[in-house]
Amino acid sequence: MKNKSPLLLIFLAVFIDLIGFGILIPILPTIAVRNFQASDFQIGLLVAIFSFVQFIFNPFFGSVSDKKGRKPIIVICLLLSSISYLIFSFAGSYLVLFISRIIAGLGGSSISVAQAYIADITTKENRSKGMGLIGAAFALGFVFGPLIGGFLSKYGLDIIGYTGASFSFIAFLVTWFVLPESLKEKSNRKTHRLFDFKIFSEVLRRPAIGIVIIVFFIITFSMSNIFGTFSLLGYKDYHLSDMQIGILFGIMGIFSAFSQTGLIHFLTKRYKDVTIISFGAFLLFISMLLMPNSTNYTMLGVVSGVFTLGTGLLIPTSLSLLSKVTPDNEQGAVLGINQSASALARVLGPLWGGFSFQFFGHSFPFLTGAIFVLAILIYSIFYLKAKVGLY
Image (cartoon, rainbow, N blue to C red; front, side):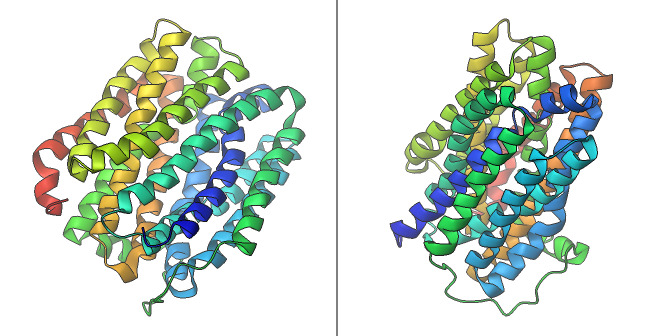
């Protein structure tokens, strides 16, 4: 690593913000059902709108960060996240809840810029480890956040919202006052418009970059089929409480943190990125088949852990691979486009997940995800290595 201190600081900022994110996400579906009588499909919309906003804004924020610096964009996004939780705390209808998720989507654009920040301060050899820190921040946020959310769920929307806002605001203060700027050479490329299909198509036509973005898109779509529906599965099929669902998310976070802070370091020293992607896809495939077919709460916890073990390997390794095939002065723009494409996958996944859960059966979102992951597993074993060179 070039400098460990900024790496630690960006990790802390993302981690603190994601505790607030983790507090809300596991209990959001059940809150929407109980408080606002939302249907399964409406819950899919609630989850999807967050990612749809990121789909529109991520390339723009990433491109601006290439020109203006990473820190200002991260600061603005963290402040927006804090505001979104405050709006959530006053939600008296499904519409206000929906608006809070729109603003939260804007704030969530900080993640792609944080990824570019890490690309700025790491070497290509250490990039997987650096990207793993973002994944670890997600994982740890999902250890502590859901447990806090499950505990707070009995106190009402206002307490949950205030707590989430507090964590994001602390992250905002840490970033503003302590985090140094990482960008040394600012780009002269034109800043992207809010959404530019031409830029998207140009990037996707670049062989190695386009292939990795498409692989990441399919992986993300497969995983996001269960966003929202996993909590509904626990609530409706396994008859779990918010606290029990929160504990499941906590278990998932522990497994994910292990894979992204320990296991991935072990594997990257011994195997190429493409091999790790294949192994992660295999774990994801098996776990998604078993999730709706677990016989008890303990088995569901183990299967959920295996699921996040797979995602914990897939996400940072795919990001590292994309960063390695991207020129240094385009990291923010390309990672922003990738985050936008994955945001689109997180729009389509929950929409399909909620729709298929309601109309085709509760196991259908999980089966759909497993089929797509199987396709990625086969592709990564036989074709991906040749497409991206030696990585």
